[in-house]
Length: 84
Image (cartoon, rainbow, N blue to C red; front, side):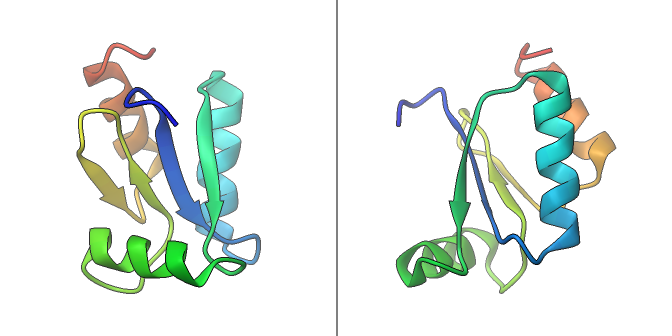
């Protein structure tokens, strides 16, 4: 993974995670999807980043992150990063 990669910590059972994936896919944004249900270390990392047990956790190339973001939050951040 490079520093320019968006990482999304989530799980298949999570409706907010599916929504965020659909949004990123629909916008043609490349990202690394990390399944916290299948990887305990990833789940611990997502919790460390978020400060709580909530998903999705979206980590952006500038080091910032969103926890359970709305579509508007994600789109605004992508625009700020000039990815849209």
